[in-house]
Amino acid sequence: MLKAQKRVQDALLGGVLAGLAHHWQISKSLLRIVFFLAFVLLNFIPFMGWSASMAPVLLYVLLWLAMPEPSGKLTEKELENKAARTKTFYNYPMLGVVLNLVPFLFLALFNPDQLYMLLLTVPAFVLLLPATLFIITGIIKAA
Image (cartoon, rainbow, N blue to C red; front, side):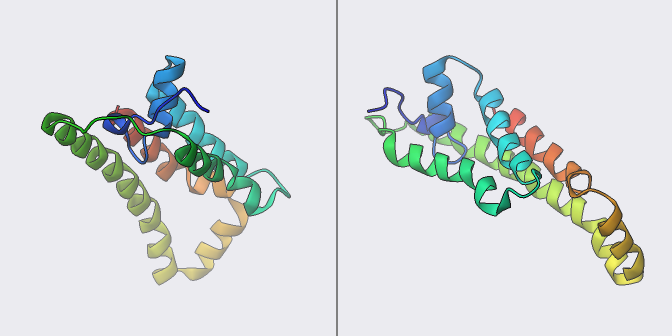
């Protein structure tokens, strides 16, 4: 049985990483960034397949099921803080995804040959770097 508990009041998703960070006495943001980068970087290891990249997601779900819920309800102030933190977190990734897609949509509409050349010559990690940076910024700002 895990000694760590979910930290619902600090959660961005299910409170798993916040609970582990609290249990290990490390920064929530640091653990979230490491977890996110593990998910992203596993996608770029050759010949690993999508199942390896989903390992962090599967681990998160298993921990979410295994970790006990804290007893007691959240206060009104804790609920407000959680809502504000969650809104901050989700706004940054959405902005990053939109800003990442706009150049590709523009090229697809007006110069599809240039888009194909870009997709074939530039590594996917570089193409997704702006969205990745916005997601990491969202994690930091939500802390």
